[in-house]
Image (cartoon, rainbow over all chains, first blue to last red; front, side):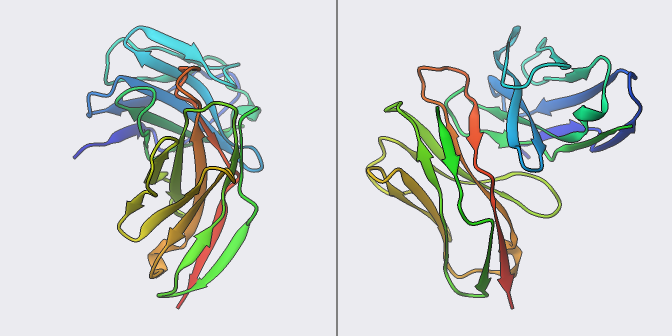
Length: 112
Length: 117
């Protein structure tokens, strides 16, 4: 089944404890992206990747890192999480940057 | 600046009736894409339908159709024969034009649809 997977789906952590949210797609998509969804602010792009080893900042990249060492994986790294990073995070992928993006199931993160 | 506006925070529709969810957009780029996504209470984002700025005909996908009026910059979603499972939040989104090359989707604030039995 063609899909985007994210892990974990739910995470409660404490301020400053490094964490990684994994994202993987099995559709051989070149483009991958991370968004966060917050009440009243909607969905905003954090980082995106046009292809392997090519990543760039979106609208809200502060406090996040990404890497794209393989085509299928695009992990989101929070080196020192803070409470303002409590959010619902989505990974998305598409065949290329202009194509339809398919979203993963979301990761609900709470930083205490 | 590119912007998506959904003016209906919440809507009700009777089961088996049709409903239209409004979406207007603002862009100066001649090339853009418009999308609708559904977010049920479980939280996932489900792609419904896509309309390209140069597409001559309105997009349709099963019970979903997109009423694209380019001159008015509107891209309303029409759901025919509503079902209880259609109850969800619906987001209109626009992909930045190809010139920007970020692939970023700009989302509206969403419309909550409740289908009544």
